[in-house]
Image (cartoon, rainbow, N blue to C red; front, side, top):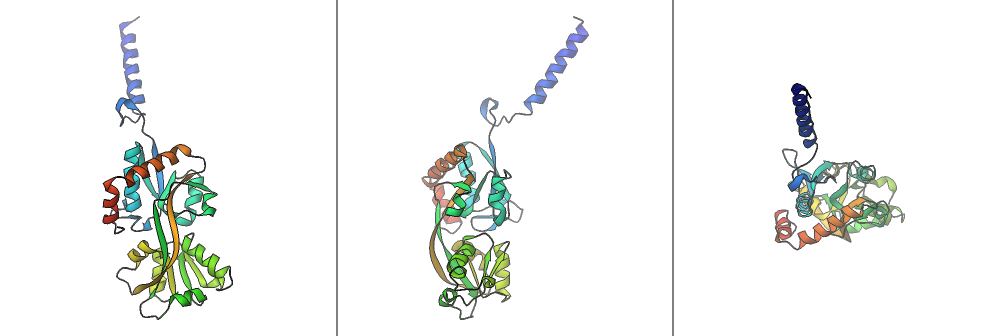
Length: 259
């Protein structure tokens, strides 16, 4: 074979080898590809999931997910997603899991598979300071209530006040995000706001709004994956168990005021 042809073939093979090497994630020893997952979050849900001043996802759930990913040997990125469309986004494959304070409900469990519960919360009710509104007014159905669309707060009002005929359907105002609810409460366009307790406290800080009570819903948060994704669900459950047995779990609770 002509030496020039042989040299050209060797060079071509070297170029191809370099090109193919660039297609493999070699972050693991031996060039083993690392699985990566997209995590859907509500980006306005402190202290669980929100964006910092640089636009980075932070929060109790975000850091928990990052720990679990490292523990289980996969990588994650976070995708802010509208809450009322987050389950459809999961079903459509736009995200791979939801880790953002999602309450486990029978209705949702028909559409997704949930991890073991990792947190329990109640719903809180806030009003404008000095308004003299009470929890009795709420239960009597005489208030205009604001809630984020697709949340368990909105579901609770529908099931316990509207469906029972206690409150008019038009007296429930729903919003794309909870900060919009608080804005309307501050501007006196609604009488009360309902939300999970820790995020409510974050949302009303520094505003003329006060929490007047809680509804003992005893909701459990879980991580959601697509129906039938047993492999990912198994890793999430194992990672959650390992995290909750690690001192870092208590550090996270203390860091985000959940201890």
